[in-house]
Image (cartoon, rainbow, N blue to C red; front, side, top):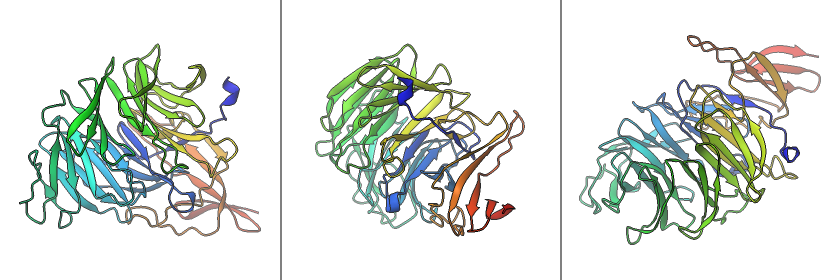
Amino acid sequence: MASDIPKVVPLTCHGHSRPVPHINFSSTVEDDQYYLISACKDNNPMLRDGITGDWIGTFLGHKGAVWQARLSTDANLAATAAADFSAKIWDTHTGECKHTLQHSHICRAVAFPIQPSPQVVATGGFEKKLRIFDLTRSGGSNSSSPTSATPNNDASPSAVTSYEIGPGVHGGTIKSIVWNQDYNILTTAAEDRKIRWWDLRSRHPVVEYAVEGTIGSCELNSLAVRPNDAGILTVAAGRSVYLFDGLSPGRLLKKIDFRYEVASAAVNNETSRLVTGSAEDTWARVYDVRTEEELGTFHPHFNPTLSIAVHFDVANNPPQRFKKAITARSGLSVSRLTANCMVQEARMERSSCGRLAGSRMASGGDGTKSGRPSTHILICTKTTNNTKAILPSAELWWHGSAYTLRSCGCTLLTLR
């Protein structure tokens, strides 16, 4: 029933100027904080506060559309895959590019193992090659060329050692890579409509599963409150969503069919909720995984929803144990299940937006706030095809005897 769905308060994360093909949450880190990274075709991936959506910083350096972006579990590193034939590894505290991993074609997918301070990264794309890069075999920020199927142990100290997994197996562009809870197992989703589970020890696929349509998304959804939770591998392909056991490669838990082409999907097994984005319309829909009943619909964007990410936020919602869902569209902004900023309005909601990352990145905010905001105000402005008005979110602060409305560190007004 629709009444089971908590009321969603829209929150728009402004900043991007082109379609957002992928978004990714970090795990919960210090003080119940977590972060969100968004890939964008404007070449500029962005890091945000996962709770409030507040902008922290922009990673500058790619010269082509960024197709995918991921954070390490401790949120200390970010990885991006781009159309400039490269993948980049970033320090999220400083915004520095630590490694540039060159490819011979567009890089579409990137993945870290599920561990803090990862020392390897996997990449894939139009080359149809799955590569593993050893980030410890490098002299710092550098460019490294792709290598053959055997490790390049004779490379110069400044080059990142890499090797290819399963040469010639993929029959199409690699669109997504997922590192499983088992460090030795990787999952790839390719345009040849096959999901493959790879054993890094043998460098061969353990099992393959053919889906019945073009793959839109492939993500591992696990519970942040269960560090060893294997999770559920959620694949959106054609008019179906496939749910695979995150522990047993290739084991299909359930296949759910829909009346529309599914562009993206994410699941929370704890609440038995599935969120889908359609490639044919602008709606996001929530379903009960067990009964397959549609529980509610949201109109988050005016374009198809390309990516959906969920975070199991127990700290903010202990009674309901409800996930936070972020959607990304083929438009100008990242949104937390929100309508686009085509109507002019101001809205207030309770928020923990005092928990900002502060000076995590030199290119981000100054982190000079004092006190704690009691309310978060979102200001949406009308836009046109030729003009985009972006207003930063404002915050209402309580100082014992008065409220002050602040934006970008400036006091806009005082209420006594």
